[in-house]
View 1 (cartoon, rainbow, N blue to C red):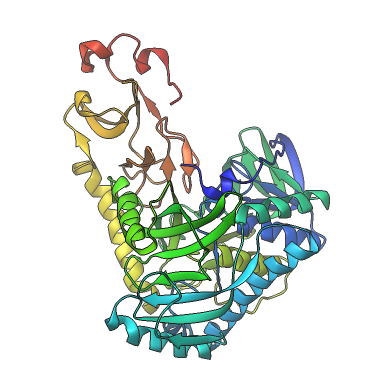
View 2 (view 1 turned 30 degrees about the horizontal axis):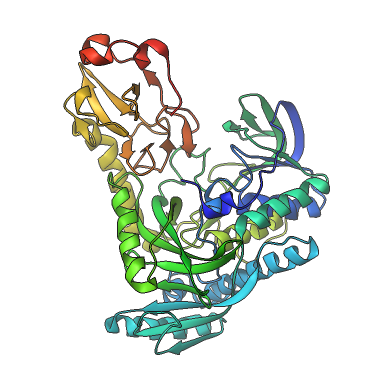
Amino acid sequence: MHTLWLDTVPRQPHPQLAGELRADVAVVGAGIAGLTTAWLLQRAGRRVALVEACEVGSGESGHTSAHLTAVQDTRWYEIARTFGRATARRMASAGMEAIALVERLSGELGIDCDFGRVPGYLFTERRRDVHELEREAQAASEAGLRVSLGDEAPLPFPTAAALRFEDQAVFHPLKFLRGLAAAFVEAGGQIFTNSRVIDVEDGRPARVRTERGSVRAHDVVLATDAPIHDRLRMHAKISPWRTYVVTAKLAEPLPGLFWDTADPYHYLRTWNGPDGVVAIVGGEDHRVGTVEDTDACFDRLAHWTEPRLGVHPDRFWSGQVNEPADGLPFIGRNPLSLHLYVATGFSGTGLANGLIAGMVLSEELQQRPHPLGRTLAATRLKPLAQAKEALVHNVESARHMVGDRIVPPAEAGSLEDVPRGEGRIVRLGAERLAVYRDDGGDLRAVSPACTHLGCYVHWNGAERSWDCPCHGSRFDTAGQVIHGPAVEALAPRDIPDEARAPTERAGSWAESGPRGE
């Protein structure tokens, strides 16, 4: 599933990391958080090496719906209640600074990324939610945002009320990231792509290791959204969710960013592309690995879109976000680490929070405390705020870690029960295998145990991937890592010849080795 953003920018080649390199700071992950951190640190005089598993912006920054907004997913009245009004004001200010940073860098560096200021609207189609908007309007105003509450949003369908936030923004995230990457390299920075990190060592110096090379640095920033070094501490405070996006041609652009009060909520904006106006609609979020029929998520999103906008979606993709237990992202030194820093828990406001992460981390790594440094610290613990969400998340993880071994997800009775283009957990003798049958009928099998902490993976039908419901790792049908925190592939498994149907025994994957899809 190619995203609109990745399909509308040319490839940007960078070398693969090979041999050993030294730097002041190694940044892992070339998305919005990693590139912002790298750029700001380099501008401050640090030698920075940026290491990316695939290409610049090809991760979650390239799978966003591209709302550039200072408005957090967590309601402002909840932030004020949990963290205090002063923190709400600092978060609102930082969000507006993040938007201004994109605007300023786009101008200074000559990056044509379709940036534009627009209002943002939190709207509801239900009269019973109007009180929530009234409450949020007061809290947002107290946080320092320019807001106004009206009877309706400027949308082509009726709404009961809408809260308008001034001076939010839209842009093309990949155009911005590729432009920032080019400026970073031109100024002396180093970017290495197609260089998946397989190990990170804390120490003096710290070390980032890939299959072909390594970087030794005084500090390491893990800007991978899902922390790849931490085995459990950070993952106990975040939960991974899939989110879905559809696009469709529209006659006229929408005058802003829009998101509603539904649960799960919907969000929409437009982009003026070379072929006309494109509506971008997202929603139908669910915890990773808990829904097998993910095609149904796209169907529900299309069914929400069609009667409201009068268009039929023609492009589909999905992304992944980490929800923080207490409502705000975790940015700073990794728990129990000396020189490793993380940025995670961005929720649905990944672009602004990624920029905020860059601003916070660049200051912290220069030994200059940021106003949000203590509030967003990855080591923080807000027992009352985190208790409910963390309990639900960790009970759910424990249920999958133990329960899936007793009653595995989507278990097939035999290999014959695995449909073409689908995957199932299959018990063969004393062993369970994650088995995929490609469109040609060939089978391939891998271990179902996620290499992060051993939870059983679940099949994701829409994206033909094996997804871990515990901490969000994802693997392709050959077992290769698509999304962390796992760094190792699922172990390949042979399918015994006697277990196959007679038509499958000649030329099987077990005899000839894996094949590309």
